[in-house]
Amino acid sequence: MIFLETARRVRAGVRLLDKKIPGWRHVLRRHVEQFDFADGDHCVLGTLEHYSGRMKVLARKHREHDDYSRFDSALKALGIKDEVGFGFDCANRFQGWEEEGALLDALWRAEFEKETRP
Image (cartoon, rainbow, N blue to C red; front, top):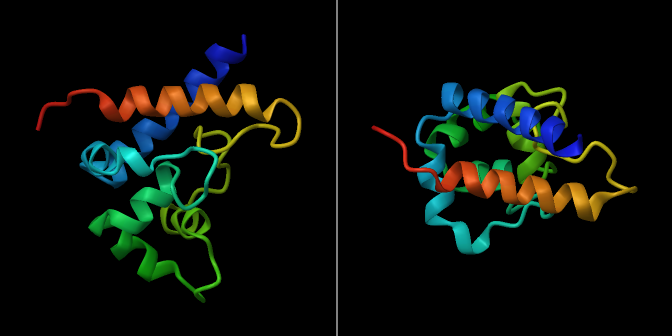
C-alpha cells in the first residue's frame, strides 16, 4: 500500500516538473552522483534549484531573503505548499523515514533516468 501511494505522489511531482521545469530530468542526470533524496541541497528540488536555469529564474522572483535552503527556495518558487503530496518529502520524517525515504529515492531516480523524447 505504501508503494502505490508513494508512487502516486511522485507521479504528481513529475507532472508538475514536466510543466514548470522542462528538461528537469537532464539536469538531474548530469548531477546524479550528487543526488541524495535525504539532503535538501541535493534532493530533486535542491539539485534543480542549484543547477536549473529555469528554476533560478523562478526562485529569484520569490526569494525574500537568502536564508532558505535550496529545497525551501524551490518549493517557494514553484508555489508548492504540500511537498509530501508531490513526492518531494516523506509523509512522516520521524517514523519510517528510512523505508519511505529509500522508496522515494528509488522512484525519483527511476523517473529522471528515463529516456524522454525532446
